[in-house]
Length: 357
Image (cartoon, rainbow, N blue to C red; front, side, top):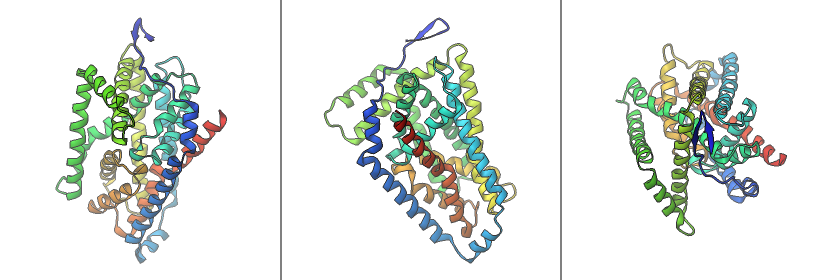
């Protein structure tokens, strides 16, 4: 039980992730296969988008690259990473074990690596729980913190998506398709969220029934994980809405805004560096990136590789945000800063966490 302001809140019942299991996952054939698939898809996607876009104008454009904007992008990546670490650190203040910003950033980056090599980007949580449990944070509390961090960002992204679509113009075929997709996800997710809040005992029965079957398939295991994590999230949210903990939640929300502006701002700074940021197009670039991120969360390929590049190609080209000769270069750089850099650093962090123990 967790005590706050004379109130006793039941902590989510969640067993620590066994050390041997985490080490096995980091050295298993499945993980190695995930790394190979991720690298293969990333390389193939980069080659394809470059091959479809490079012309003589591309080489002329590269001669006019503004290097200082690359430095701005690097600065935004550092700001994004620190803001994300600070956000998890602030959320940890609601409990008895506070996590420093650097340690929190390491946990998040390790999650990026696992997301890069597992379908639907769901492989990060076990490693993150394992690391935080080593620091004395109970699995249930760590799960609530991590899930709250994710919900803060994606509630902002999905909440803005309908307004972004209207701003960009739903007459665009691709934008209209993305809008319909996001609307379906929002409707299903909202319905499920209400069910979890209103009928928690029913959802728990579903989870137990799905988990009871011997040798469950991937879909069944995925559903069990989703149902379980929703339960932990609801309990965690109740924790953050008690007493002064709401101030920590508000602080994390502010840091989420900083993180979001830095994350989405990298697209605009890269386009500016390539000489492609049109006057008055800053918010259109941010909006297009918002729609893209809304969709990529549910892509089954490791790290959304292949789909991310194809989606960026179609969206930025259709909205006229980047000329075709420079679009391939932009997409490769965008993927490098928005995901690949974090995954690479996260891989080193993950190995360090395991080797340290």
